[in-house]
Image 1 (cartoon, rainbow, N blue to C red):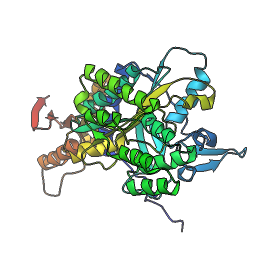
Image 2: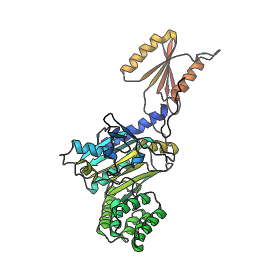
Image 3: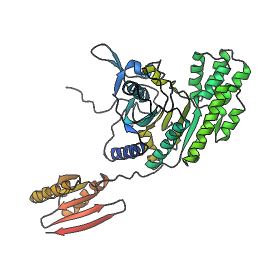
Image 4: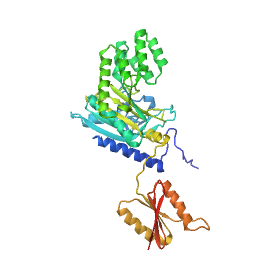
Amino acid sequence: MKKRFVHTPEGVRDIYGPEYMKKLAIEDLLHTKFRSFGYQDIQTPTFEFFDVFSREIGTTPSKELYKFFDKEGNTLVLRPDFTPSIARCAAKYFMEESLPVRFCYSGNTFTNTSNLQGKLKEVTQMGVELIGDASVEADAEAIALVITSLLSTGLQNFQISIGDVEFFKGLCREAGLSEETELALRDVISEKNHFGAEDLLIRENIPENYRKSLLKVTELFGNYEAIEEAAKLVQNSVSKEALSRLEKLYERLKAYHVDKYVSFDLGLLSKYHYYTGIIFKAYTYGIGDAIVKGGRYDSLLEKFGKTSPAIGFVIVVDDVLEALSRQNIDIDIQTNDTLIVYFDSTYTKALKKSFELREKGICVTLFPCSAIPDGKDCESAYEIYETYARSSHFARILFVEEDNIRETLLTTTGRMEENWHE
C-alpha cells in the first residue's frame, strides 16, 4: 500500500482560506503603492543558472541554495534572492538604456538552511529595483517608498534603520585589512557578534587603535546624532563621504515627511556582499528579523556586463502578515462575494439569480441546503450557513426558498436582513 504524504517538509507551509485572502490583500496594497511611484512589473524565472547566485556575485552562500541539474548537466538553483535575477535581466534587455528604469516584482524565494529559528525556507517577497540612478534622491525615493508601502498595509509602529557600507569599508582600508578579512569581519559584525569581531581583529594583528575604531561601529546607532558621533571617529575620505551622503539623505527624507520613521546604524551590514553604499532594514514589533531589507548595489550589474548604479529593497510579505496579526491590526478584505443556498425545489430559481449577479461582476457560490439538523426547521439551517458565510468572508448570503429569497448583508458589526417575496 502506497504511503500518502499529507504533511509538508520542514520550513514550508500551506496557506488557504481567510489567511490567504488577507495575504493577497496585503500584496495588492503593496503593488498599488509600487505602481504609484512609477515602477513597472517584471517577472523572472523561479530557477536560474547557479552562476547568477555564485560566491563571486556576493549573494546567498552555496550551502544554503537548493541546487539541481537539467538534462544538459547545467547546475540550476531555486532563487534565494531577487536582486541578482533582476540585475541579470536588466543587463540583458536594457544594455543600451542610459535613463533610469524602475522594476517591481512579486514571488517566492527559497533558502536551504537548517538554522530556521522559526523562519520559513520558502517566503513570498515583493520589492522594487531602481536601476541607472546613482543620486541620493534615488536613495530617498526607495526608503520613502518602503515607509509609505508599510503604512498602506496598516502598520504604524516600525522603524527604518539606515547605514552605509562605504563607511565601514573606509575604516577597513584605513586599518589595512585584506579583502578576505574585511568580508569575514563584515559577516560577524552583521550578526552583531562583538566578541567574534574582536577575536578576528586580534588574530589578524590589527593595531589596537584601528581595532577600537572598527569595533566602535557596533555602538553607532540611534537618531541623527549617531552620524555626528561617527564623524569624530574617522579620518579617511571614503568614510567621510559616506557620512556626508547620509546627511543629505536625511534632508531628502524630511522633504518626504517620513523622517520620524528613520534611525541610523553605522554598524548595519549584510551577508549579501554586493551592497556598495546605502543599506537599510525595517523592523517592527512581534517579528525578530527585519521585514524589509535593501540598499545600493552599484557594482552588481557589472557582473552581467552592464555598468550601472542601482538601489532596491524587498519586503517579506509573510513577516508583514505576521506582524499585523501580532499587533492586532485588522486587514480589510474587500469582497462582494455572495453565497446562494438553495433547496432541490428552488435550484432553477437560485441558478437564475447566480446568472444575474455574475453578469454584474459579483462572485457567486452555490450551495445545496443539506444542513438541516434532524427535527429542526429551515431557520436552524440558515444560522449554520450564515456562520459559514461570515467566517469565509462572503459579503452576503441569499437563502432561496419557495416563496421568497432571504438576503442578509454580512458586515463586521452585524447583519442586515431583507426578504424578497415572490
